[in-house]
Structure formats: C-alpha cells, structure tokens
Length: 269
Image: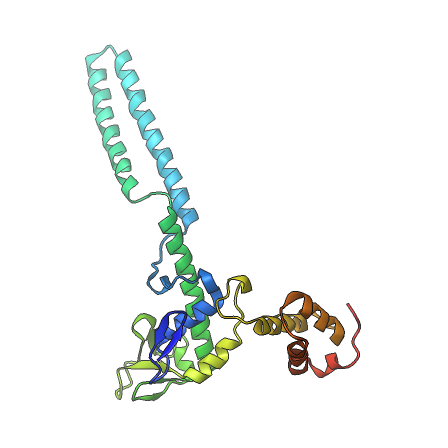
C-alpha cells in the first residue's frame, strides 16, 4: 500500500483510474488540489450566473415600476370602467411580478461555495483530459482486471469503448459478445515514470517537486525557447541563481539534457 500526501492507494493490481486522477491532479495543481474535484459538478460559469442575476434584478425593478405606474393611473382615473380596466391590468402585472420574483431562489449570484465548485470542476476537466490523452497515446500501460491489456485507441472517442472515471470501469462495444465491462488498472511503474515528467502548473504550489526536478523543467524550457545554443557556464550560473542545487547536480542536469549542439561552443545570451 502506498501513501502520497495522505492519498492511500492499494497497489496489488496497479492504480485505479481515480488513483491516477488524484496523483496527476496533485502533481499539476499542488496545494490548489483539494481532492473535491472528482465530485465537482458542472454549473453555469460564474460570469453567466452574475449576468443572469443582474438581468433578473432589472426585470424585478421594471415589474415594480409597472405596478406603481398602474397605481398612479388608477388614482387619476375618473371613469368607473377605466378604473376597473386598470385594476384588472394591475392584477395581471402583479402576477407577472410574482413569477419573476419566484426565480430569485434559482438565480442567485455566485457565492464563495459556487466559485470553489466551479474552480474544482475546471481542474477536474483539465486533469481528466490530460489523463485520458496520455492513456490514448500509450504513455503507460493499462489493463482490465482478469481480462487483459487495454489498447490505447480504446480511450479515444469513436472506439465504441466507454470509460467511467468515478467507478473505474471500461465497457465494451455492444457487438463484442465476449465481455461487457472490466475494472481498469494502470501500470504503476509506467505511470509513475510518466508522472515524473509532468510539469506542475505552478512550482511554488507544488507538493512534491524537488529543486532538481524544477531545474530540469526550467532547462527543458530553455531548450524549447532558444533556437541557438547557450553556453554551459551561462546555464549553470543561471541554475545556481534560481535553484538550491549543488554544482554536481547542476552539471548532471546539463550532461543529461543538453543536446550535442549545445555541448559545442554556443553563443552567450
């Protein structure tokens, strides 16, 4: 049994989908990951909710003004038939106002709880998409308990297979008469190796990213951002400024990650 920041995982048969989801979420979001993401519900965007509430308040104000306007006209009216018609109009206006007021219980501005759920749902969607993308690309192996390996294309839309993250199940196409569903298990070693290469969205909030990993991520970014080679001493000095690493570890990162073109004489930046 493994423990990761209080996440207890039974490893006898590998990770469950939910285990991988939580581990990836913690890796990407660090301290922002609340572990409420799996249960987060889809709702209207907070901006839409705020706009709808403002629109409702305007409609209520207009309905109030309409009733008050009719009341003023009733006071001015002299003819009995005109007064009766205005009163009937007022009754209808009050009914419409009541219907609008009744929506206040369902259209309210987003409070702190609403905002937290929305943020959790967005994190859920991002992590789920990243996990399924990695599975569909075969970044690590997965299998169905007692049924054999899962082919990477099964995770893709249109394959006929469906997965259910919350209950860790994959179902087979209706035409497959051999099986109906299976319990998903993800290869632990393969997933852990892949996860180590996933860059946290914000290093300052990372729960488990070491200084060495941060330096590796930073150097990979330099490789992507600089088309021309940068000299070794420039990179090592910059690492020394940014990360709490020994000279030996900084050199190891350079030796491991720097391409041959960079290990030759590169221009300084």
